[in-house]
Image 1 (cartoon, rainbow, N blue to C red):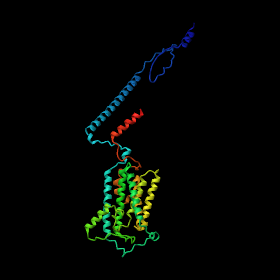
Image 2 (cartoon, helix red, strand yellow):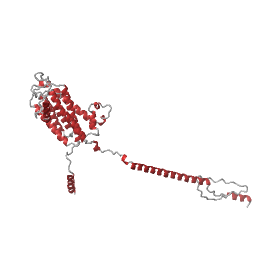
Image 3 (tube, one colour):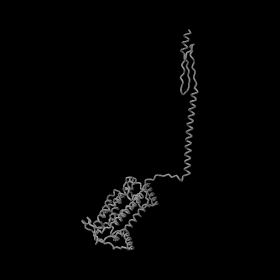
Image 4 (tube, helix red, strand yellow):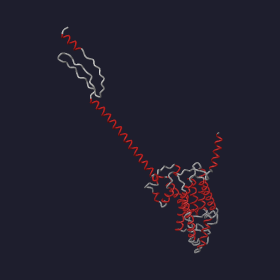
Length: 390
């Protein structure tokens, strides 16, 4: 074999080398180079470089640092929470957590406010009797000042017993309203509204009849004699008027001058308005019955010629408007703080705010037993019901 063939055969041979090297950035092997004598160099496995080892160490160090920083931050948070809890324990008397009230507590009873409204109504009623006694002394004699002309009196003749119908209807309406109010669930809120409206309307009434004294509406009036400077006699008249409720049925209403406006119209209208407002809508027949009693009672005032027509009209307007204004404010909560609410400019708005401040929702028409059932009776009832179920 010649030397040339031997060289070619040696050139065709390639060494087979296997190496398992794990590096992050593998380095390609260097190309084979020929040497002068034709023998190729042998390949060797290259060990991992020191740079790769340094990178792995840096990564490990970074991971250790991150873990250490996380642990230190968690430790600091726990230490801060522990410090705050210790501070709260030291000052626990000064930390108060407000719990939102239940929906039922949005209609608090607040009977003491109802008592204030009752005293307000009682004061105005008593003071009204005082004003009636004062005005009675200023009523002109019917022989000197005849009754004023009235259109209703021109067309309708007087019926003597009609005023008795008025007072009977008023007593029936007031009795129905009292029974209905006793069985209402939120009776304290409704009662303070009723007392406030009664007091306000009778305060208006004593102002109007004091500033303008009208002559008697008819010649059938029999007025008690005037006492002038007899203070003791006036006091006895005031007490008699209060005890008799100012009704002709009881014989306590013998004084004249309380014409503008009609107190009977106020009570007939106001009692019907409360009955209708705080009764369920399915009792429409009951509401219509009360309306008939109220309307017929007001009409009988005029038929009996006990008041001028203007007395009844002003009494109706004052009662209905005051009732509707108050309940509009009470039932529409957005109006209370609205800047363009003209109803807030009424003189009684501060009193309204005092009475209705904690009433945060519409008062529902709900009924409940006025007397709570004793606990022992409840337990026995539950035992009986449990035995029946078994």
